[in-house]
Length: 277
Image (cartoon, rainbow, N blue to C red; front, side, top):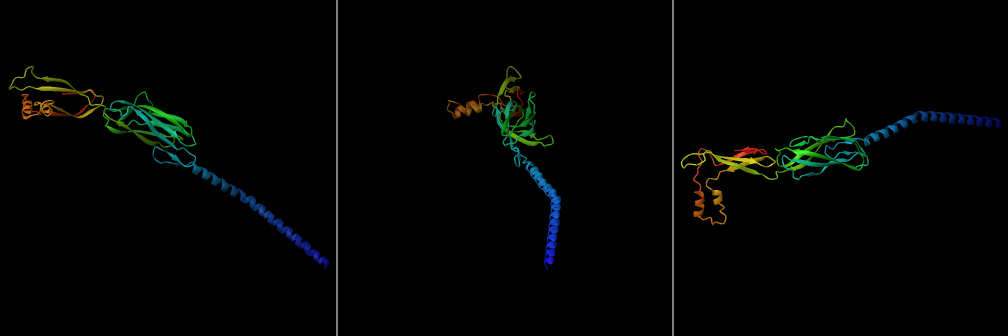
């Protein structure tokens, strides 16, 4: 009886030991094979997350945003002088590049585009490279820009483009507005000539009037009137009382009438320094 119990105990212990050893061995093998795959999956997840954090979000505007810890930069105009600028003149334009994030901007390139009515002075470089713009910093640019004499008055678009990170990055367009306005219209009457030295009553004669644009910009839609009756004076006779007798005397002051022509003409456009007769 005692021998039987002893035999059962030994058998049970051996079975338990063998089972435990086999289970432990299998678990160790499975763990050894699975752990590299788990580690690889975790590493892939980390890499994917890092890649997503560096992805560009192009807003197609002057201000370019990125997701995560990445550049938030702007190109703005600080001022231009003179204000407003007249057609045919030069303007000094100051632009600034603002990096408002805690990360550097690499390989930044800026180009001012020559589009009507603006052009770049020959002494200026339209394309400029900055290399790196540090985080939370501002870079300034100065350009000398010429305004075309044919520029239309009002807000005119000064276009530019820029890119950064590397040469494969596409250009980002932008623009600022510059106010163009003629300072003063100076139209001078250079000469008044007649075809004869003495005008004979009843005879025809030719009167030639020459005007010149003295301004530095184009003058448009100019009206020239030859007042043969002095009606403009009669409508504003100054200190005289505009009675019927006074006004009638003005209308009959000059004994001239136009022949095969009119007393008023219009000039579509006069370039700076150009004359018309």
